Image (cartoon, rainbow, N blue to C red):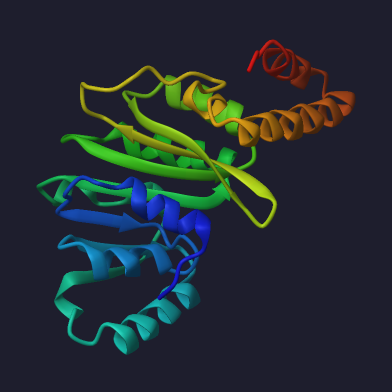
Length: 215
């Protein structure tokens, strides 16, 4: 199963060994399926939409008939993942949804963490406000980067609830060290917030923060 550049980047970022990987049905379970093929982890596929989980179930039965004991399927709210029911290292992947929804999900998930859990995020839009929310949660930054696919540039955030890692910042740091990709991303971001600020004065502060970046 060939992944697009964005999902392949997310897959390749993960170099740790996990006992459990939660694919919150990023692009219809494609990423979780790739981990099912490339890792020894138990893969948990989760989505609130029954039809999506039914499709993932059919695809897994077709492409991974021998791996039935190595994955689980859930039709439920991602905010209520039963992380506490499992031991060992866990990774939660949330990609392809808006930054506002990602912030809500992360706030809920981080309320009940008992053991160390890692998170891999690739949100669409609202990165600044998402990062502000993440700053308020018991999380550290392991890795961040930009990835471009179909002329859209995404932020990739690899986080941990463990004690080691960098402080999360509202603007990011390493993402501005990727040469021309960083420059184009900054231009797109400035254009976006300049438009938003015309109708929402509260966005002016975000625009100003990005304007002060020097690459």
